[in-house]
Length: 96
Image (cartoon, rainbow, N blue to C red; front, side):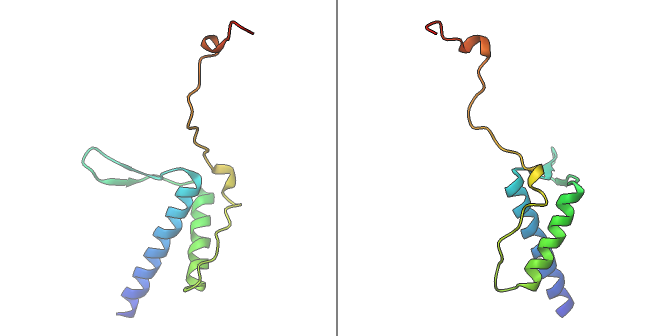
């Protein structure tokens, strides 16, 4: 019984750490195929190592959730752009 509890805890920690990384990176490492099945895409090795380190940190500090350190994966972060890019030809203001 205890083995199942530990296995469930470890899987939950992996899911939580993976979700944290995906939210920070603004990247989803899974896709859904035409049948509705989730397909896990390969994450970069830095993300995999970060997730393992975060899982260990969460496991060791159960009951007290430490702030994540994203410095290892910062360079992979995607910054979404909420505006629209205009064609430079269309943006020329004749009054200038």
